[in-house]
Length: 474
Image (tube, rainbow, N blue to C red):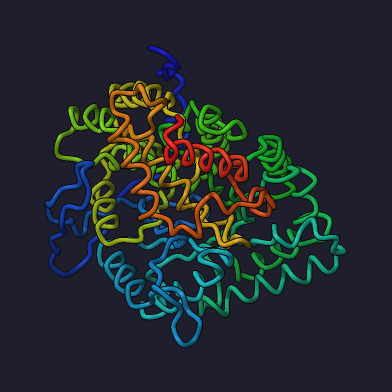
């Protein structure tokens, strides 16, 4: 088998995290029914209550729900309300109420999410529940202050202002899980030093933890593995002790991370290094921004052949949940149907067998032959100064790749159907004034992308492809 999982190595890694316990807690109220919502096999069985899997944080003893709510993709309004709010607060309240009723108690946000409005919306919704009934994670997102020529003192001042504002927006007086946001990007170690070490910001956060305003201190990682290793070296030397770390992990990135993005690091390595140190991890991108739920039809058939009753997405969540040092698996659930299906997958989690893991590795090997762009719709590239809907363009392109609607030439037997699907779908998904043809290659977007996509190059490629389809010159 190509790119085969080392089964003994896997079992060794799994055993390293045996100190993290799984359990369940009881919730109240009768379950509600949901509706089927996509062709990938999401079903209409009732959503379970009182069966959520919980993991125990070895540092604080927190009982954390294995399904965590990523607050990066809250539902938005067609246009801002009279106060300038773009988030649909009523729907956010509904989603959080439903999640709480079904045992979800971990909510992950950041000052930069949803154009700076996620913390406020999350705080409003959670304020309606007892403070002891949930855990809040937010981040020091000072990456946009760095590289601007600010003095260490000014960078520290702005970072502290961001930190204090998180308390105000979330309407809380302590933060359960606080992260140094998205370290490893940009210049790697030099950027890390500027953001947190040279200006004293990390030492400030350590003191805040000692004062009880931060209960768990950790970091989220993207990019340069040297940064990841350096931070663990500090832990090993006792200079800083990390209570948790957030990594990108899914069955595609487990051993194929560099095939999906050359700057990514295999999750097998990241998880293994944390498990050796008994550091629990929270997981981002279990679905790679939805790419592992919107897979090509032949992959759908392959997964449904194994488990006809379960959704395609459930494979990805159960994969992450199989690893005992995983504290919580985050999902940006914009829609109720997504929330319901993910609850089914992890309430309770049924760990994957060794045979299941090998089957998923074979599936991942098949998937990396498809040239999708590794966009996860995080929106860090937005807003575009020229009005492009960058995530919308990339999502449409990936969708067409996954559905086989990217004809290579006019001789392709599926050419006419695929051409129509691409062009008509493009106009429906992305307004003409926001399409790739309007990119000026200003490159304000690429430095913000955690996946290190060369966005202007992709815009040019997609625009050239669209023109060839329109002119019939492919």
